[in-house]
Image (tube, rainbow, N blue to C red; front, side):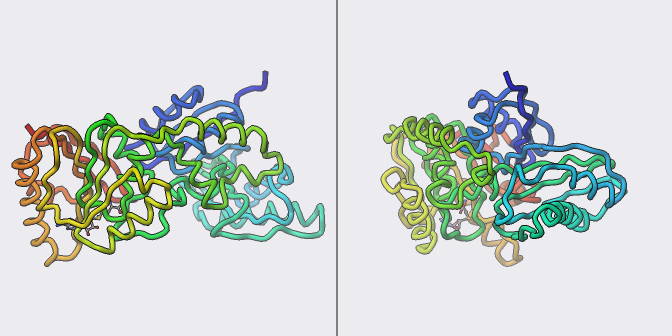
Length: 381
Ligand SMILES: C[S@@+](CC[C@H](N)C(=O)[O-])C[C@H]1O[C@@H](n2cnc3c(N)ncnc32)[C@H](O)[C@@H]1O
């Protein structure tokens, strides 16, 4: 039996344990969450599955070398020793991401250039030609993490970040990343049976991710349809047959019918158009109903389900006063008209959240990029 391969799924701070849970679901081994991601082991099949199924990770990295490096020259020499023909062809493009911390090499951009030079110089020496660089959408993305003079050099197996599912052609005001929206969906524990309402849905990301999860729809299937696919699909050793089998398996696991109902509202006509278009791109136009409406007129049917929303945070001063009144009135709507529901508010502005005026049953810290945010839970009796 082949020895297991080590991988690392990067994740936004606060959602590492969710990524670890997802990895368990695809039978990854030796799963170890740390700050910023999750180490795991498995085979190439595990790697393909991880890219196909993970909803909340940013990227899946595969370390291919680890060495000590105290100078740019030692970095260059070590990178040149790797057989780069195993991972890319001369006609393919390349990009290098680098992050240096607590090391003698302390300039990430310069270190990335040295790594790129080592790779292209190897090709030039062997063939007389060199591959091109494409920082936006390369065929091979190399990732270097240099901490305390040790470099872990990895291949980015995902290529583009995993939040780029391919369904979001347009975005409204302050859209959430698809991976963060998927983490919120995981945390709100919707049972897929009652209502799932986002009354300030913007481009519809939370609802689309909720529908995908309820349908057991592997998010990577959308990417295959709409984009260049994953980084590992462009490696010379890509196992097309195995990938095809995993894709077919994932398609067979989709549940077309969701017992519950997903509803999205927004004050903005433009947001509703964008959300509807995004849902259509994801093939979910039948699963989610969008309509224009003010959250202050929300009167949900029945008394079972979740209300999940990400109201505007407000950055400008005048806006803040208006938002205080919006949060307060929304709190009154929840209290008076949403009995039996559980509400979740995702916000980066805790001062505003206080204006909701309801007792929080739970508060979780999540990061939206660098912004520390809260997912606040309210039980509405
Ligand atoms: C931060 S954005 C939501 C972004 C969304 N989660 C996404 O991923 O695209 C907040 C949304 O609240 C909407 N909004 C603001 N006031 C509203 C109101 N009174 N009723 C309904 N929607 C409102 C805005 O139009 C905006 O689309």
